[in-house]
Amino acid sequence: MTRPVLLAASTVMAHVPGLVRIGSKPAREIARDPGLVDKLVASSRGFDDAVGYAPNQAFIGAIHPRAMGPRPHFNRVVEGGRRFGPDGEIMPEREFLGLMALADQFKLLRLAPDLAQTAAAALARHPLSESFKPRGLEAAIGDPAAELARGALGLHLGSGECAAALAPGHNEDSNLTAPVIAENLACKASGALALAHLLRLHQLDPASIEYVIGCSEEAVGDRYQRGGGNMGKAIAEMAGCAEASGADLKNFCAAPVPAMVIAASLVAAGVFRRVAIVGGGSLPKLGMKFEGHLKHSMPVLEDTLGAVAAVIGEDDGRSPVIRLDQVGRHKVSSGSSAEAIMDALVTGPLDRRGLRITDVDEYATELHNPELTEPQGSGNVPERNYRMLAAMGVRRGLFGREEMDRFVARHGMPGFAPTQGHVASAFCYLGHARRALTDGGSARRIMMMAKGSLFLGMMTGQSDGMSFILERNGG
Amino acid sequence: MFAGKKVIVVGERDGVASPAIAACVEAAGGEVVMMATECFV
Image: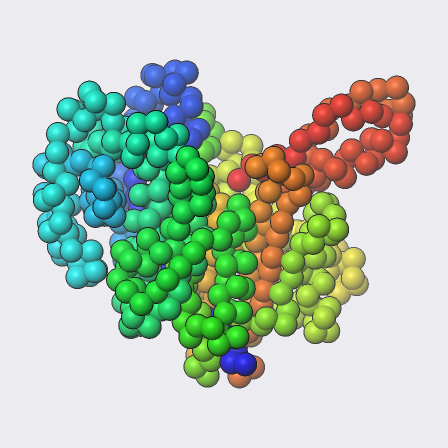
């Protein structure tokens, strides 16, 4: 049995302020109060501000989350902040709408001529132009106004201009409506962007990827199989992984962690040599907390889709090892209190190898940016998680109560991820974790943990969670 | 303290989930008529 290692990871964002209005929460509120559209447009953020936003620079690996500086972040830009970072990029909206059109094999998305031309020109200069072949955008040129008159969904730019229209995939299938197709195309395009960046940044041959596990939040399907589709293989195709098959794994926000564990298991068992895991962006979560931002006279900061890709392969003697002997899982019988969940995910697996909470250098947990959640009253999610961990350290007698803040500062980090559930749940930290555990990095052991709110789907009152440890190779 | 009372329980996944609150309410003699756990992210 070979040891599975994290060969590569990438993170990308698409800055799409014009799509915020079709996020789930904004769309519901706009239906009640159409005047909200003007407020959203007036409060949208420009691309330069999104690129210079410290949490976004942390997301693409340009700075570590601990180096973001003091809050608030939204009213300043990071000096030297750039579109492209060590782990990926922040793509502007025109290019991303072009990428969505390239992801659309069924010609449902029609772009205004000006958008198609500017997107094609920009994507032709993109480092991944070979992968995405933007000349194909000529075939996507159409008349959005005419499409809207026929009942299509308008896709807007941050300026408020309607620059594209999306027809439904079927007139009678509630799982192929235009809003559902929009979510899935945004997910596919951003996921493919993440995977293509990963392959280029880490010089991996696309043909070496044998399987792609999709762990996005979106469900692809039709009226007979809602959620029965396969985003993993769709992304594999778009990213040029011609030798790959794939499938999707669902588990609300927790999906990426079990996807990584299963991918590592497939490699360890010798079924496949290289497995990619991809989570595309979640369009429904754009603007999820926008009311809090408007209330506090802030820009609508949930204006970016986030996507993550990773490749797990056979031991190369250098990349961080995924410890399959130390996977934590929340069992049916584990209990629902925060303490019971932490026992299942953290102390249980650590105890199996005789490790203490303090033996793990860093914990990657729910890393939602608090600047997005606090204005709406949802609190600081990562801090809550880290304080719970610290409390368990105190309970076990590892350190005193007065040391809790120091534990949080040393083993935790500020939240920096957009509120794209699965992406924020440890997955976004993979690039940083790989750096910290490779070559000159300072860490020896990092735990990745995620939780999923299963009860939201009303099939069980349970939540779920899983964790695993990444360890320095040879350590 | 909840004897004879009907109680609506609202929990939060990262805080205290509703089953844990409901168990306490019932132990204190209350009747849980509805419970929900919310996720705010």
